Image (cartoon, rainbow, N blue to C red; front, side):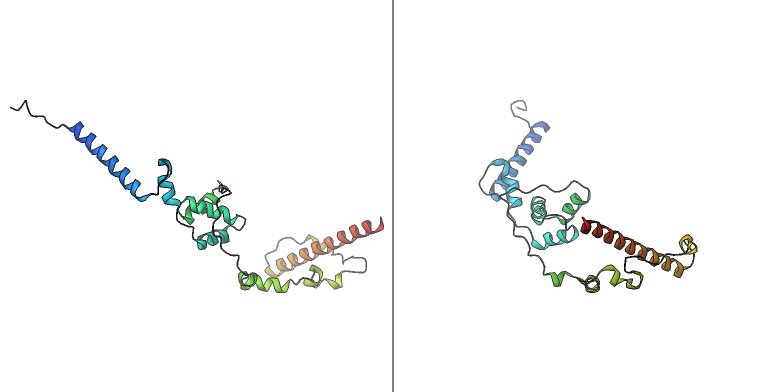
Length: 197
């Protein structure tokens, strides 16, 4: 009688478990996704949610050279992961261009007055629109009628990097002034040549 009964062996159990797992997985994916092609079921359910404009703005603040629409497309593709998008930009792989049909709700640009921080606003105020470098650094006395400035002595020119902090600051200030005055002199010479011809 033992020979008449069929026994279940291990390979048959593994095959039933595998078929059952695949059938259950197919059923669960089918019920959660909208109707469409079989290959697009998981990607369309994952990408159906909108991208958070705050995340777009966060990445745009870190990388202002990147287009917001491109950032939104990458966030849309990776499920909204700011870290993954930042990593792609930092590693130099770049972001893929979005298709023309992708039109995300982009965050509105912040008002210019609100975007300026305290330090930047102070720098903007000190460098007014009509102020040039000569005026900003008080070099009007060193600019003669023909754009010539005082010549430094050989001892002043030969001074190298010293241990005294005040002497280094003075040397750097003098170099800055010399560069500004040299640029002014070149600009005046160029203007004189173009005005004379």
